[in-house]
Length: 212
Image 1 (tube, one colour):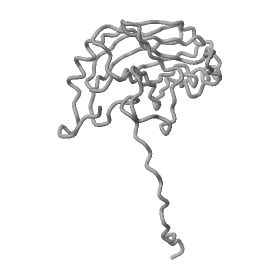
Image 2: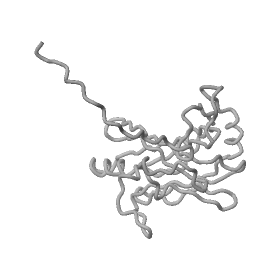
Image 3: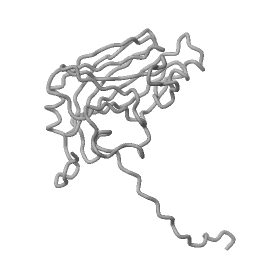
Image 4: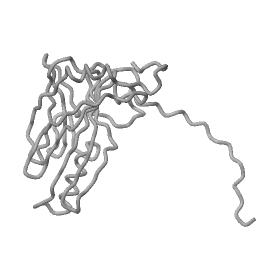
């Protein structure tokens, strides 16, 4: 035999990677109940940000956001740079007293004035505390898909995880992206419908204990 299997080697013990805590992402063992959103969060001549659907889970809700961009007058390089800046970990220059114009940011505000945003979110899962921090929290879930129609239109999908469930009342979903011409825009979201739908989130294994 010319090619022979390598000699057996001892596998080095690696500490297991911590799972995503319940405050940072939806529970993997549940199928959230889907609520039709059908909301346009912001729109310019070249950009539309929409909320087509919301998934309600026992521990929070996942707001599924679509961002569509048309290149039109932008050069291919500028269009690509704008698409990349959608992802906050690709944006530099965020400091305690400055937010770059190309930083896309989302937030929620409840009727009592309580507010949470995606600004300053950490994306290294190894640094995430497992114990729940003071709520509420709005987490941007990376890994959204990107599709194009030719070279002139781009579609990016993303998820915003709101933990815990919102109060059963209307709350505001905010978006701002100065570099793209989107000023602070607030859209009302039905928290009552989300809380009600969460009661119908289906566990994949009914005999298991749901995450807290």
